[in-house]
Image (cartoon, helix red, strand yellow):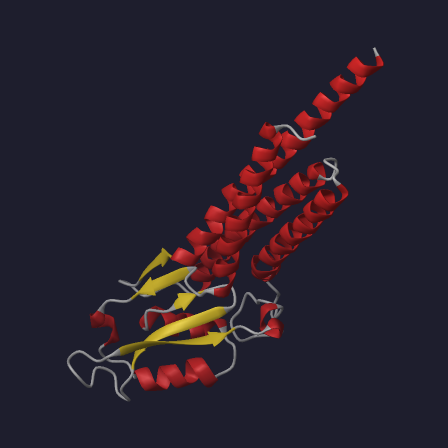
Length: 250
């Protein structure tokens, strides 16, 4: 028999875990982790069509896609990079052209590609810090989601077996998932900061955090609260069960 307090804690923890999973999944799949805003005066002398073609069809190059995103109000995600361009062939052909966002996915080999200290030189020294920050920023959220999924399976098995003991493991898995989520945000912010040190934005271009990053950041406290509830319920139930057993023995 499970006390109502413990059952309530499990239900609330499950709801928090579900919300965190939804938020983190949306954050991973969207491209608004970081965004740039370029004033119109900076875009007056550029060829948007040429930049767009190079951005979409060119090789994966940090310097190229960074400079293009600076000028074309780009956004950066864990798996996407996007630019905002007019739908017409020429930049500002009409007084108020219709704008559209075009995105390019970052493939798995590109995610694992090393970063170098000197642009365009594969023979230069590899920047290990940026390389592993980039890899961690897309691997950690996948690990986090996998841990939550594993915790859900353990919880379902515990319900089928009518055992409260595995709840402790569910709490530990959610705790680790929360740390991975926090690590994702930290690695991404550190990676963007280092990238801008190598390729600083032009004067007037402003970078800001996007809503996708905030969704990922919100997932962290939700996972930690879910973990705290699961751990509290498991520990409290175990203490209560130990007291009841001792009482019956006595």
